[in-house]
Amino acid sequence: DRFTPLLIATGVRLAGSIPSEFILDIFEDSRNYEGMFSYSSSLVATSKDAKVHFAYIKSSARTGHLKELEKACKESSVY
Image 1 (cartoon, rainbow, N blue to C red):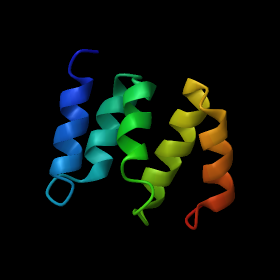
Image 2: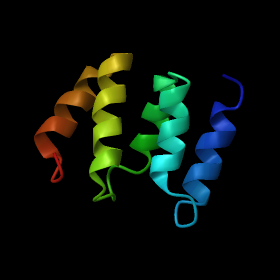
Image 3: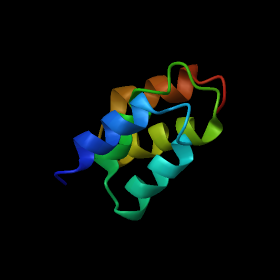
Image 4: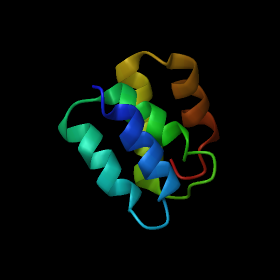
């Protein structure tokens, strides 16, 4: 999707103003799991939000990023 990079950049830049759940729902609704992976990977290291961690785990699995999936499952303090 050609708007994915723009949505990711906007979501990350405005993370304090736009709830991450809103951005993740856009990716989920459009079944854009690569976008969801890219967006959630930029947040997961510093986020305590279970929805961000779950989105990262889910999108890692759906897109075949198995090393990231394994790492997230082992190291997540939320899941």
